[in-house]
Amino acid sequence: MASTLTHNSSLPVSALAWANERGGSSLPRLALGSYVEDYSNQLQVIGLSSSLPLSEPDVPPTGVDGGDFNILAQAHHGYPPTKVAWEPISKRRNELIASTSDVLKLWEFNEFNQSNQSNFNGNIHNPINTQPSSLNLIAQLTPKTPGTAAPLTSFSWNHSTPSRIVTSSIDTTCTVWDLETRTPITQLIAHDREVYDVSWLPRSSDIFVSVGADGSLRAFDLRSLEHSTILYETSAIDKRRAQPNTQSNIPNKNDNSPITSTSTTNAPLLRLSFNPYDSNYLATFRADSGDVHVLDMRSPGAPVTNIRAHTRGVSGIAWKPDGGVLATGGDDGAVHLWDVKRGEKVGDKTGSNGMSRQSSSVSNKPSLLKDSVLSYRGASPVHSLAWGSVPSVVGKRSSWEDWIAVGGQSQSQQLIL
Image (cartoon, rainbow, N blue to C red; front, side, top):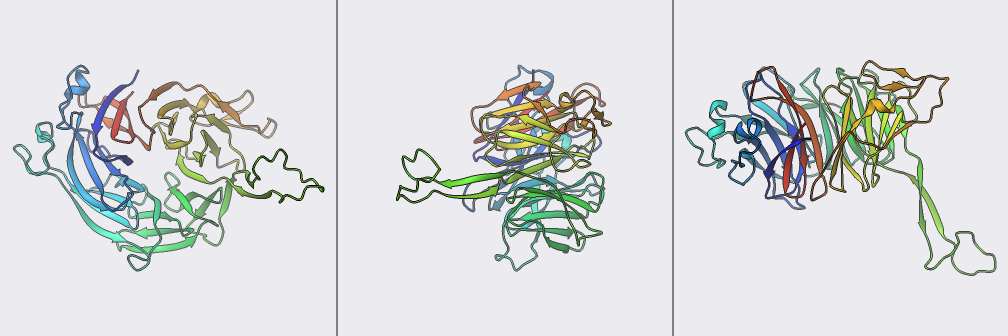
């Protein structure tokens, strides 16, 4: 059974990212972005108000908002952030946070002494016995004149080469940025329609994958941008303009009523997430679908596993750091954990993490998962998920807890597994 910690937000939470651990000494910190349909959105960094909720679950919340977290720093963001992420572990004194909306924004987070964090009263203007943390905008990157660029839908920070970020946009392009020079390395037309998400291949400095409104999942290599590889395409869906009270779509030659018009389009793919342990595997999902598809890049064309995840549309996916379990969140308010290894079949070849890979002699029909290993249901639709291991602040320094952050209408909840 998972324990639950809560941060009560004044605005809906749409983007989440756990800070990278730094030497195992810091309390858990989370970057989150709000979603309101105007220019008043916020970017915040919140921190656990005390170590007591971890060591003594019955202790009342100590945050000033009645939750377990306090706001360490916040800044005006303008348009809603479509994604936030912390810089991969580096030697910088102050950590960097990136976010996307109308442009790619870089922020510097300057944290006060962590030993005083448990005494912080949550008021960033009047902290107790310490100086407040700060969140400062240091760069806004756009390949076009500010105010004329198309909105950005997502980005990915390269862990092998942290000076590189790739962004995706509704104008069909992906742009690779050099953060040291703050200039674009390249911009390419990635899809036929809007690009909704992009991710670097784990442990690669050159290969990234994107999904978009055209229903395709494509791979690109910076060393050879003349070509891209389509790894997966969704099936076409019908869009019919039926007449009222029409009983049949078969036209009757004696009927003078207008014929129903039919067009087809591929179902859009909204997000993707690589298995961090085995980069051959990634998960994705379609718009307005409760299913999640797990793909093997070595066997393109069809999923290896389909997960019957939610009764309403999927809104977020996140892998456990060791790659064995996938978390999904949906508009039905549920968060489910899936043991993807259960999808293997008799006769399958098995990857290093136990995930299945079909041989040519075995049916290429994907396996189906319908039973989750753990479920949680909130009071409102899930907007986003973030899964990261953060150092435990109780017991031995080598002990770790698995944390899942769940963003919703008015709360960010952290599930401790």
